[in-house]
Image (tube, rainbow, N blue to C red):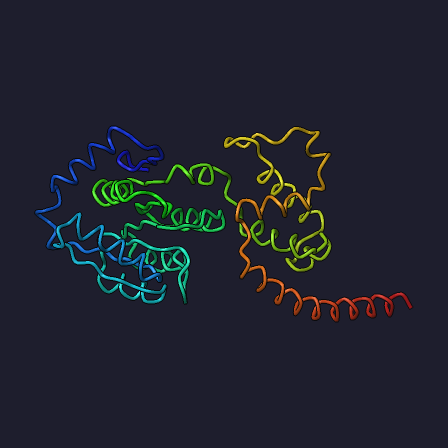
Length: 291
């Protein structure tokens, strides 16, 4: 990562204060005419609140584009190519995370601040994966909506002016935890829905031993006592039913989404019906070979 790209995860910070002071003095005044900001928020009151803050900060000289859903967000971002996009996480038609993926795919230099009231790790994990897939990694921020406008403006200053990555301290532990693989993320839904290792192996076209190994890695990632990844003591591992505990931990950290869980349940029901027929055919074939 270039030297000028760094994670800034603590407030207050002298350098942040300096950047914000410089920002407030009008560092950008010479180029404001060529800049624009996109606000993507489906809540009208919150969208107007953000616009009011930015209008006051830039003396209404900065063009601001507004979007009320994820699809409109992507369309306007690619059309206007704003210097900064401020995205809500949960929006109609397309989530802020999926909108960011689409924006970065065609506009990789876009700077995005995720402005959310949901601290769920499912969103944080997806954002981290998307950022890693963009070359070079884009500047972005992640901030809780309950922060005062002064802190929000520090994010705007750092991401827009310096290209720094800004992570709200409330989320810093989530950003330090090990990323889950695609299988591990899916496996959490299988565990929540009660699938056995045998069924998971059939569902994912893996060997039983392969599933057991992958689940063991997932449990190690979930059951950590420090940000560095130190496993829980052996006693605690013996005391818990590991599957049930994994489900609880996933719920606690927001690694499961209710809508996605319902969707997974419906897909699983359809798969079980198909696989049940396949299993019976396999049994019949096996019996015929024995005769």
